[in-house]
Image 1 (cartoon, rainbow, N blue to C red):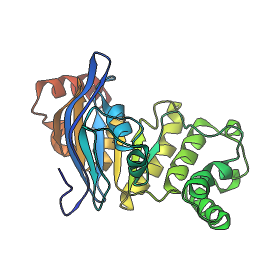
Image 2 (cartoon, rainbow, N blue to C red):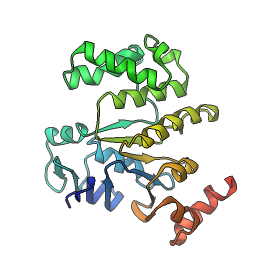
Image 3 (cartoon, rainbow, N blue to C red):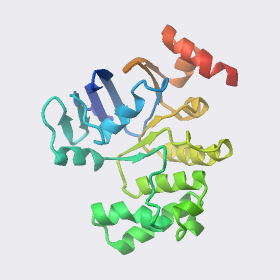
Amino acid sequence: MSPTDDALLAVSGLRKSFGENEVLHSIDLEVRRGEVVVLIGPSGSGKTTVLRSLNGLETPDAGVVAFAHGPSVDFSQPVSKAERDSLRNRSAMVFQQHNLFPHRTVLENVIEGPVQVQRVRRADAVSQAEALLERVGLAEKRDAYPHELSGGQQQRVGIVRALALKPDLLLFDEPTSALDPELVGDVLGVMKGLADEGWTMVVVTHELSFARQVADEVLFMDGGVIVERGAPAQLFTAPTHERTRKFLDRILRPLD
């Protein structure tokens, strides 16, 4: 499966097992340029494994991950480190737990990838990092260390670190789930701004109000399969699958 003309990414037949537990059962999806795709579903449904497969952090047992104009990686055969790295060259991940280097300043965390991996001149990387930190309201924190920041500030630095790589695709793995409730809004605000600017994003989240506002397509996963997909207005108000309805009744309705 190759991306269609307006698509950035096409995934077909993605499978992954951990021992006897098959966590992904033939996942197919396509992400168009400038689109925000949100994955929702109960814990253990395979959402994070999908993200990690797209970024080359996980090696599926089968399936194809194909970006427009390459790379295209077929996991049904042995995959080299270079092929996995080729996926990371097109995407960047924002993790649930920030994953910042604790012994490096905010600025050093942000420029690490561009300088060490992409071989960007340090002066250019610093200039870009400062502009991105200003964009998310953290310019004054450039010389701070991660332990001096709140959880929400650390996560915004994590987003800046991903943006500094200038990826075609941004991947978010439950970026607000580890935050105190009062810090969630700042991170979601940055993400909404990125969506408004036309960044292509795949987001795993339990923030269903965010999905309603920002997503172009919502995929409901359960048991390693995509049970249902559709526009937020359709999926959240008139889901067609009983499993989706039960999930939303439990998670969404009490918040309305």
